[in-house]
Image (cartoon, rainbow, N blue to C red; front, side, top):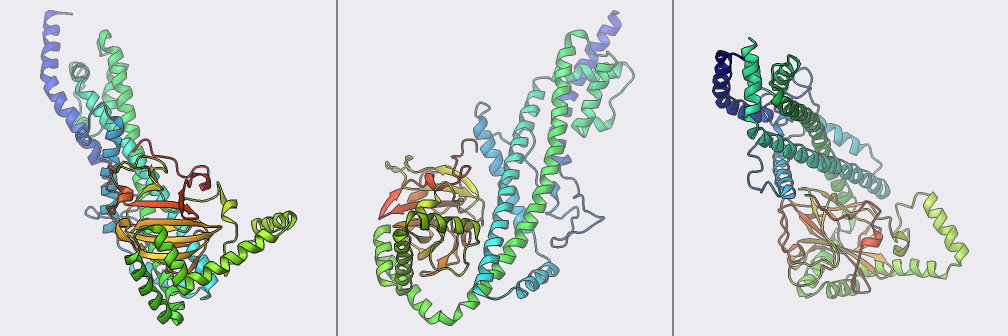
Length: 497
């Protein structure tokens, strides 16, 4: 190498090392900008229920940015990957919530939903089944959104790691760019736009042998990282498009459920006077009760509809106890092979038989299990489930609503008598759709979460602003561990985000 060429290399390297910083920063920023692409259905096609995408339309999938870029997780330590992932997910969750709130159901879609409700058989059993089906679809969509949220957070954190590593490799990219310039291959302006163009430049330098042998290995590693960054960008764009579709479908399902609930309420108006009287009495008893057990006992003794439903459930339990083993096996087989009667007023199964079969009442992450420290120096008597804002809450099992309403610091609460001396307590909701004395079926929607966590003793000392649902199982007045009842994949404690 001549002195002249050596001096030129040093000059190019020094000149470009400063430019490299700008390039790397531009790549970091452009990775986020490039994610804000027009929706695939805009402008050629339209969405039936969402305002068509446009550059200013917040429903464009590009507007859900997984906070890619070097500063996205600056609030967390580089040695705290769990903290970085948690911060990233919270950021993605906020963006999704903003996007969801900006969506509007079109008048055409609203009318389509209204017609589908009008076409239903208005019997109680038909409406119940429609509500159960709607709740199942809504939970599926909420699970897809939760999974997508985790994926976007993971993609964002991984992009951050790569972007940060670029800062330590300025000399490598400076060498590549200098080599290309020396060969008369000035980097095009597009190099400052996307990681794909930077990847192309690095690969060109490698193929042409323009990189000095001592930096070949580092250059190949740079190419690998640029390829991963490109893949992550594409995966993020695809996932955001899926998320927009799921958010739109969830909005439609929420509207359908609201219409079904209104129709169900209209159907039960004939007993409205008695219902209002019992609701008032329930609230009075709730204000006087100092404990859950005291509340349950007073309600089951003093509220006529609750007492009648409880007595009916006890009769069914007594019938099951009097069966022979053969009769019990036959009844169990029939119940498993024949759809349960939607008009039933007692649980289809003994609660003891439902172990390892129940679904969690909402989609979310279990933050605290039965027996864990509860932040007040005691052990938790139930589980705490962090959900998405406005998540639907279903009845995990057949049961009679003993109480539905506000109780002390628990937020909106529903207590179900599921038979055999068992009760399920669900609290922390923003809205309840059921009332005392009502018999609900497994999977039937009983309420919805709010936008933020209800401050209560049950959710004390939790590092989250997400809505939290408190779930407690009780047997003969005592709290019991609910884990034996949940299905295999339900109720796993969150250990990542």
